[in-house]
Each structure stands twice: as C-alpha cells, then as structure tokens.
Image (tube, rainbow, N blue to C red; front, side):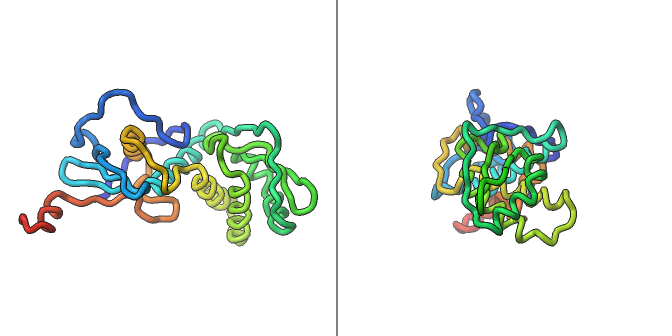
Length: 221
C-alpha cells in the first residue's frame, strides 16, 4: 500500500537541505535510501524489501504546495520584495485578469500593480519560490490559470489552484542533476509531508517494486 505520512509540513526553502549525518541503512526509511538518478528526473531508492522510483519534479512540487498551505494556516505566506519591480507585458486581457485578483494574490505573497497598457509590475514574490523564480513565466501561467478557473466561485478553491501553479514554479525542475544528499533530503521530506504520494494534478509521485517481483522478472522465483 502507498506510504501515507500524516505529519504536518514545515515551511522552508524550495529544495530540502541535505542533512550532515552519515546516511542510515535503507531499512530505516519507508522510502529507502537514494542509490541513483535516472535521466536527471527520476530518483531510484533502495528500500528494505525492494526499490522506489520517485519523479523528482512532481514530488518536490507537492512539497512546495504543502508548505504554502502550512504557511497560510499559520502566519500567512512570507513574501520577498524585489530590489526593483519586474515589469511583465501580458497583453490587455491577461493583465486585466491578473489585476482583478491582485488582492488575493497579495495574500499569497505576490504583489502586482498596473503598469501601463497590458502590463503589470511585480513588487514581491512568495519567499518559498526564491529569488531566481521566473517571474514572467509565473505571471503568464497564473493568467492562464485564472482565466481557465473563472467559473470557480469559491475563494478557497481558487486560491488552491493558484498555489498549485506557484508550487510548480518553485519546485526542482526535470533535468536538474541532484547529488545523493539532495536526493535523500527530498525522500525524507516526502516522508514527513501529507499527501506526498500524489502531485498537485493527482498523478503518483513515486512507485515501488518489491524484491520478490524483481526476482520473478529474472526467473528466480
């Protein structure tokens, strides 16, 4: 059965920081110990009775989303002011859509204001996303998301869609090479985060293969 941790998420930097102690045996952890990274996208971990394959982007996206939710339920989402406002040209309709939800976005750490025809100025971003977030890409995706979800009436549901979009921009990307410490840190965070077995779109973040099934593949059983 999929591992379903129940511990509360904690807000921290997008990429889990690696712990300094020497790695413990795989049997000590439900999601095992990292052994390899495939195609700069999948983490292979050895467990006590088989292996686990993790989609690093999908898994980290879920972690960031849960951190957003944890911050919202506590003291609100921390924001990081930009040294100078970033101007994003969106076009009249998309700019109007984003500005329509400016108050809601501000609650989520994203401060926007009008800047001429078809453009918005971004003054702050959620601190979780970090300073290197692609602000223009984030704004364009949010405009699309808000247009697509225009029929959604509930504020909480709308906010959840926006959080999911922002979490995608704050997560480790497919194609990024991770070292063993980073991979293990991600696995440990998954074990401590609710709903970590599914990404924000409902797809699995990891799959498991038991040793007995591997042995069957090689005719050993």
